[in-house]
Image (cartoon, rainbow, N blue to C red; front, top):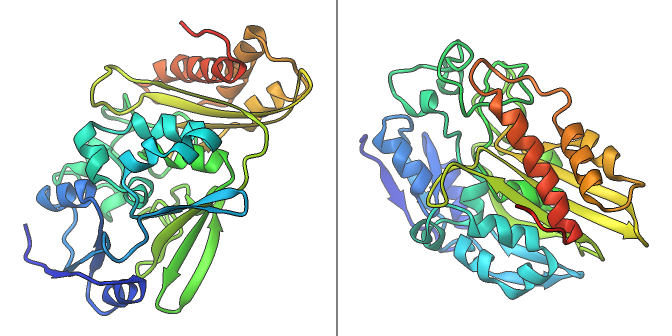
Length: 328
């Protein structure tokens, strides 16, 4: 790989300064994503900025919710008792990430900000939109794992983060810092669909900005369901998954949050499924109706039509888990 400088900042201020005072500088946390891209000649930074010791690695109660440092390891998120009690869908997503080795190395911030897993993007021989080229190879190529929503192009990747989906569903905000200050961005506004103007990015972060915290609001009283579908139980990427959060008024669903993963270039909120749930009582029939509603408007490519049924099933079973009903 290309030679690069390596910086070990001690705090946030030093970290954002190190990102700014270089040619192409990039942060590194657990390193599974960026190091693989460097070895595959996809990414070639002039400087790597180690943020593991610079960013917060704690989970702290705040205003009835939680403040999660970007440097928190995924295993610590999965095993945290407060996260499990207040936000069980986050725990469910975290424990499904990678393997035990990956969860013990990977960080929350790294999972949120990882780059696409598309094999055309990962192969140095293909100069796709995501690498500054002028085409996406997926529509006419091997697109089994690509998007079925948000398919207006120009890129047809699926967002690779497992944690981003429940964070969005729970209404999280992301704290972002740069040398010029800090800001909070709602998770719903953080991820960006690809356009010709921003196709090189998957989120709103500027090159000199760092995501430092995930801030979760108080969850209130709700029912929670999370369901993932993958080829194998060992290390594998989901084909599709769904996070469902339901607030109840007696036996009736008063509000619903349904967010899908691995089906679009961003974590995909399904307003159709939410509308199918609100005002209904919890039952298997209601869950099935939500699954049907969730896939309205799906636009599969030539080889990923199966994802429509998989997504439908994931939503149905996530709702059933929220209802405490048995899933096969």
